[in-house]
Amino acid sequence: MRIIVTGHRPPRLCGGYVVGGVPWQRTPESGRVVEFFRKSLENIFVARLQQTKAGEFMVPLVAASGMAQGADQLFCSICLSLGIPYEAFVPHPAFASQWPTDAQIEFQRLVSSASRVRYTADAWYRGIETDRDRELVDWANQESALVLAAWDGGPDGGTYATLRRAGKRSIEVWSINPRTGDVSRHHGGPRQQDLIVAEVLHTVEKT
Image 1 (cartoon, rainbow, N blue to C red):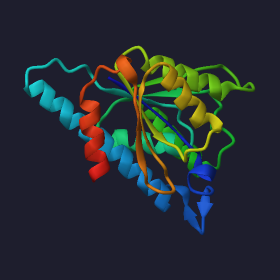
Image 2 (image 1 turned 90 degrees about the horizontal axis):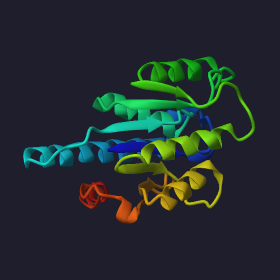
Image 3 (image 1 turned 45 degrees about the vertical axis):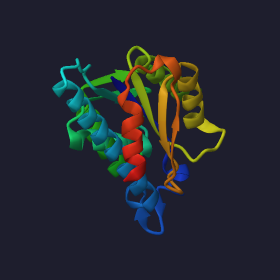
Image 4 (image 1 turned 120 degrees about the horizontal axis):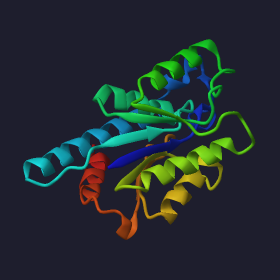
């Protein structure tokens, strides 16, 4: 099973890189996203373990992220804490070179911890991150797939475009609104073969 993440960067996720003197990673909005990602991944793992004990074959679980600040990096941190391997889809080698020093250090920590690093281009060009997002969805679509999203519901931006692209491929989507904490499910249709999805989402919504 392949799980990818999409979501907003700090300005749209929580209002900025520093909000009221608090780094974006420690805002209430980021906290909601972290909890959603953690519970989703934990419950998926438990449900799949139960499948294995019941004698069913369990396809290996692997995740992937576009490595931007915001939801992408929060997701990677949770994967690391749970021991879930993830692949880093980085737009180009100098992607984080203009970020503040502390942000570059965190980026390098997460990239170096990835099971595989894919540079989707050699250098920057207009639309490079859109192409990176397209590659993420195409990668996920090769197997039973799920998208975890931190999306405020707005019909614009890269997160919305990625969710539309996933929908066209009948990939299951679970999303949380960082501002309200509302969780929603976007059905994947007949392409989604992993029957644990409905059970796990129900558990996430209840917790």
